[in-house]
Amino acid sequence: MTTRIGPLKRALEDIRTAHHRDPAARSAFVIAVSYQGVHALWHHRVAHWLWNHGLKTYGRLWSQYARSKTGIEIHPGASIGRRVFIDHGMGVVIGETAVVGNDVLLFHGVTLGGTTMSPGKRHPTIGDRVVIGAGAKVLGAVHVGSDARIGANAVLVKDVPDGATAVGIPAVVREHPDYIEAYTAASAVDSGDSHRHPDPDAIPESREPAMYYI
Image 1 (cartoon, rainbow, N blue to C red):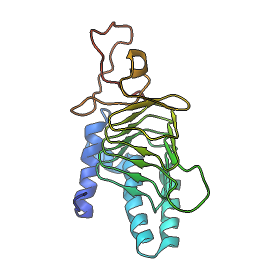
Image 2: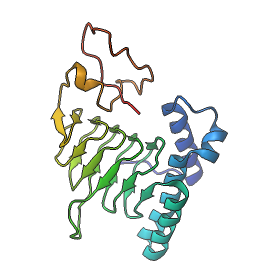
Image 3: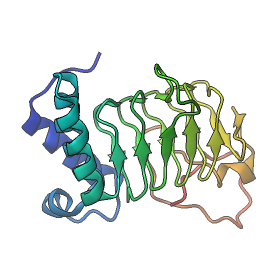
Image 4: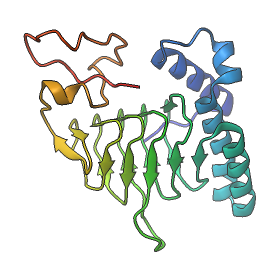
């Protein structure tokens, strides 16, 4: 269960998360005033509170205002965990019944969308510490397990187990991606994201963790 913290501490946590995960981040001030992915999360918390307290029209209006300001559309009904970072962010869409866990990294152009117009659960559930590459589409009420990686531009319509990597159109799960697939997948090393991109022409002595490309 996610421990509840106050809004100010939560905002500071968002800034620290962005600083940790983005090698281009220069200062907390720059993040606070210019990072649209962080702003989108802040707006979403207000819209989500309104939505859950019977003020659905106001929640929806707030979310649309946030969309116009950030280029990121998060439905006020979506549930977003802690220490989520939306890098670059433009074009990210998160649907009403989507659930996003803690420590998730989303790149620009990601869609957590539905495949039906019927009410009820119709959007993905994303586990903890998942990385979803730029342009990936995760569609339907699928479950992406914790520590999974979804490759850039993948179209995912099936469940992904914990720790697996899914790449391609339609996305295919690779529990142990080969050397070439590793460099088309979105991923991170065990102790946190690495910003060192290996030489693609080098011959590996052993399988390396897949690196995310942006």
